Length: 297
Image (cartoon, rainbow, N blue to C red; front, side):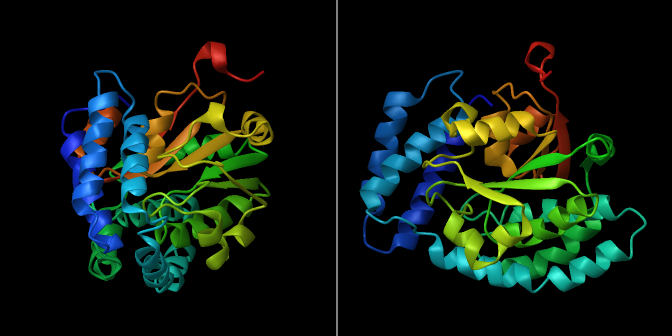
């Protein structure tokens, strides 16, 4: 997804948010570093996730803190865990278990701290859960996902935020009910409130998937070409990629992957919503197919 002018103040707001989390008086240094990154890399047609990666890499270096979101991530996991039982009952009582599991996974994406149209504190999720659930899936290509899964042997699952990943467990379990192998992918280094391997192990997420891999780098979203050869081969061999959250959409929307990608997210900003062709503030499932020349054999 191309960066848009409104992405700049949004990124700066998040830089300030995380510098305040760091609590070491580096707010101005972090903002200065972010502004310098913009001055070097900001240009029309630049991928928004690539630009965000450079901005946050500079800000993290200026803050001198490896994981300013750690306390929020732990709290988010604990809050979301409170809803697993209710979510399981919600899914079990439905005649369309997979669709409801997708809905549960999508509403978890509201746990994205420091941006508009999301929440800044995990406790706010308690007030939002029922409302988000009642909204259903506002843009729904779950039937397309079902059709792909009906012919699938393996799925790659790209995780996004902590807290949200607790609810991802339920969708993974539904997929595995059909005997499909699930290959999980988390961030290679701590960045924002995204799931790292240590975060995954803390909540047992690594036990839910058949294999767990990392992107092996500090990056907003994912770059297929930067992954290890082993992981790239697993992606090429899979039948579907499920990509959670806006950052994964922003990065992957410009990459032609050889398999279909199901983006499951909450549309929390106007640029992402516009790129998807959907309204802001809805739960969404959108499937992207590879171009004809990039389809796997």
